[in-house]
Image (cartoon, rainbow, N blue to C red):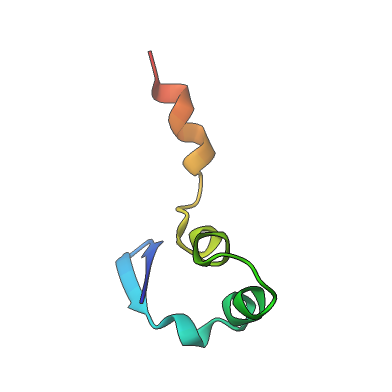
Length: 52
């Protein structure tokens, strides 16, 4: 199950609906390498702008 952030909140999707994820796993990628890009919120790189 993948939790995906969106404009209306977080949605839950089974991992099997993502062809890219399946292909990465079959190609030898780790689960983290295949899934984390799918769950990253938009604009996450801007969070560092709010640091000290």
